[in-house]
Length: 322
Image (cartoon, rainbow, N blue to C red; front, top):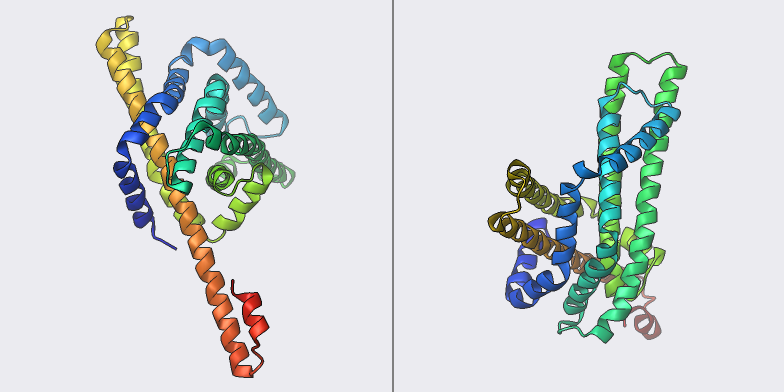
């Protein structure tokens, strides 16, 4: 299995080697998605009634489940989930069209090493679309499982009379770590499943199952690959808020310079999405090659044992080795 630095270096090399193709893909396909993602964060304050409705519904749900209302963890979690739901709804049409088609283009170009055409990308797009919808169900199920664990933990505290602020604070800290681990592993598996769907011409839950098998024992590498990309997304979102949103609110006027800066940040965001997809494809190929090496090593050990025992036959060799 390749190291994290090697996978990142190979991904950057592939991106720079095919810079013209990838940048044109970023401009034509991914740029509308990145603009929609950044705009969704900018219009959140103006959509406060809708956000307040989502927040109130989640707060009532947490209250009915017995979660402590004084816990800052659940307050921050409620705000973050409300923002994620709003952003997902706002960008859904762009995600299901532009983003998935761009991912299908990249996966097709990296799997067959040629310039993809519309007819060759369409079957991959259908598989990726089906897998993306199944990924949404998996992410919702992961969140529901985490909340169910929180429900058992906090209600168990109440039943044993351990409802002091210290116990609530400790359990909230443990819950934050547990929730982060569950969500991070779910997201990297779902992200890999999209690549599996394109590379292996399968879709839906089968692609997710294959991704789970591939990532087994390699979750640490996948997390280390996702960490710098997510830091990059967070930095670009903060830059957009500081340079574009704040400037627009102060002057209450969209000047050409502010609009140009917004497009530049959105373009960098689109390029980072492409690099993330390329990195996931290289990680997939590394997992597959590592699996093949382990399988060949297993067969060599098995054949060596049979040679020592004097039971090796030609038919056995033909059956085991392609």
